[in-house]
Image (cartoon, rainbow, N blue to C red; front, side, top):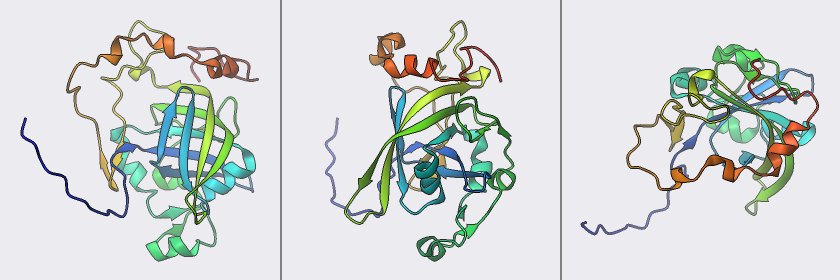
Length: 230
C-alpha cells in the first residue's frame, strides 16, 4: 500500500460523520420543540449529546430532564432540512441571528412530521423516524472553557423501531442492512453504502453487551412490553 503524507490543517468544525438526531423536548408552555443535531454517540443504553448551552433544546433538557432521540432515515433528509436555520427560542439568540436563524413555534408542522405519544416521557416521538429512544438526563458536563457547549449524558428508557428494520426471526435485533440512517458530514447529508468488509466484532452475540440500564428501563412505570406496537 502506498504511503500518503498528512498535512496539518485547522478546520472550523470536526464533523467527520455522525447520525442525525431529531430531539423532541417540552417547552415551558407545554408545546413541543423539535431540533436536529448530530453531535451524539451511544454506549450501551446511554448516549452523550453535545448541545449549545443557549439552545432551546438545552434549556428544555435542563428543566424537564427528559426527551426523545428520533433517528431519521436517509429518506427523511428533506424533512430534516426544513428545520435547518430554525430555533424554538424567541427572541432568537444573538449568535444564531448572526447565522441567519429564525424562530419557528411548530417544528413538527414545518418539517411535515407527525408527533405520537411516548410511553415513559412527556415529549412525543416522531412517527416517521424508524428509531425513537425515550431518554432521561443523568448528568450534564460543560465542554471547553467558554461555557458555550454542554454534554448531556442521557439514559435510554425505551427503544421503538419500525418493523421494517428489525432483523427477521429475532425479537430485539436491528438489521444493519435495512437500517439506513441519515448521516451528517461537514454540514452535508449522506446515507450509508453497503457493507465494505466482514466485521470480526459482529461474531460477538449482542446479548453479551446487555447492561443494567436495560433491566432498569423495564421497571419504568408505563413502559410497554417488548414487541408491543404503539
